[in-house]
Image (cartoon, rainbow, N blue to C red; front, top):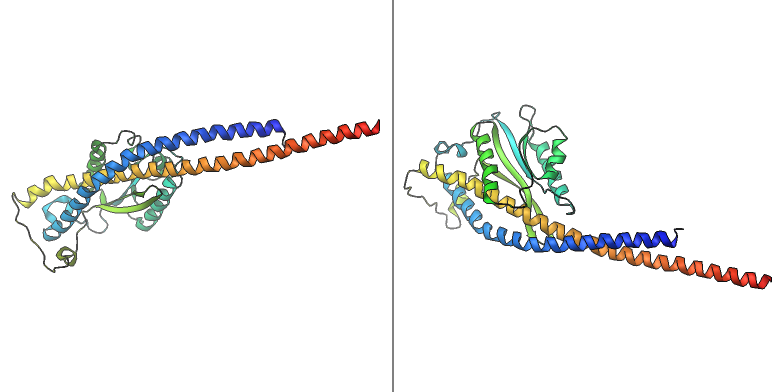
Length: 292
């Protein structure tokens, strides 16, 4: 049976941990509001841009721009961009991403074309870096001051890999922010730019719209398609950042509640131990008095 001193020491340790989890919860909540506003503001433009371009590239020749070209079988290697966090204490945020990335690697790795990785976040680098994967892009500590320039850097590296022929396709996997208590692991194809089917492009009306290009389509796509990749990467980074703060806030709230329950149980147990010690001392005094 532990002594009263040990129990008091343990209660003090749990209370100190509880103060830390409370502080981390409040910090995550304050940062979540800003991150949530940014991702909500970026979604409409990114989604509308994706819808327009996916329908637009359906009507043009794939040779119009290198980002529209579908590589031949056996050409290049698949590239997977994995977005994790730089810090832990966020529940299953990183483990879900790593698990989904592992499944994706198993499904898309061939004997002649092993998959290569682009890693954003310290947790992904620590996990995949120790397992012998070829890493073509590696960035950490960008979520502290996330900007569009960070997305441009990643997008430019991805575009270079694809245009050079070293990458046959580029996928990105990240946590999408759904709500404070819900994040969804999403895998999206960045390159080649997905094309809608003619039926999807026609919509409910059954009419396929066409466009008049001014200037020429090649000039439009030269400016627009790299920007499209940058915008989609930026939205994924914002989604992952907001999802991280939501996961951290939820995890710290659960840890705070668990610590409160642990303190109550330890206090109750300490009172029982103290009561047993007092009772034993009374019995010893009474027994001693009776013996005399």
